[in-house]
Length: 389
Picture (cartoon, rainbow, N blue to C red):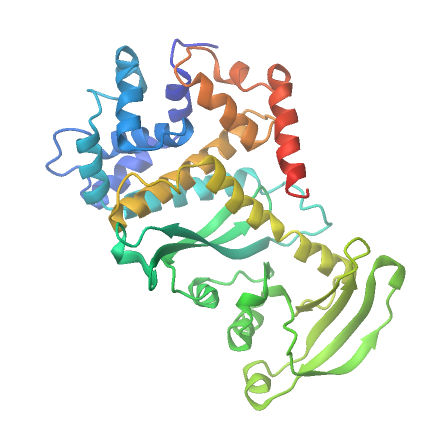
């Protein structure tokens, strides 16, 4: 039912504002604030994300053009770019990080029953990172190389629903493998990662915690075969072996046997070698789990293409982290709405619709209905096909 609210206001109603107020109070976020509260800062930045605003001036101009609707969108007064710039620089980014984590927890519960494409009851996560390039002269705190600045977004993606369960934002120099030190291994869960995360001492920590991992073997792996299991080579699996690591250091770092699966891709003619400590699943399932790791790559591509994290609204570390965490919140919010309204459309399609109907006063469900926007879904399918999926 249409209550006369703008589409943006209806979207914001899905957020747990009581929780947000408690978090703001914990960090004294609104202390001595006369204009643009933390809640309004969140709304402004979320609006900018959803409507693809490129700069503070762009945000101010767009909202000024709709001044009659600002109160009903949750803004007490016109938004000035100088006020927003000050808020981005001074309001503690941890407010928005903690709020995003609350939304993530909510979304993961909603998507817990989704299919992985393989018959598994385990939780399955993909771990990876993406580098966001910055201008060194404007972001000197994010020094990466001699003439380049960057931040890294380390993400653990729950493959049920493609919801990020862990995110850490570091400078560009942090090696991917150190992200393993920040995880609290979940017993029984399967962690899928690429070769950049191979550190046998850290992988053994996962083993001891009762968790499983699937990764690719490096070409210089020092190991010897203990025994081989029978395989059906018509499926592409050409070897399923139990191995022991060689070398003085690696054999101490990981003193128990590992499983090595060789798979030949019929389409690319490439042979891939996987390492895992999961010994009960079929070899083909292990290969399928590694293939599902590409969902985290799609997440990075999607969030870079459709949310504003390449054009930042401030140059301080606090402003950059604030914007990234609110971007994550927007992604998760749309995922929550998609599940709660039982929509079939992709997140890409939903965002496209939202971006052009933000100020409209019509029911959210009818605006986002799949039947009324089949052409947008066709566009989404074409976009994904370009990525090879």
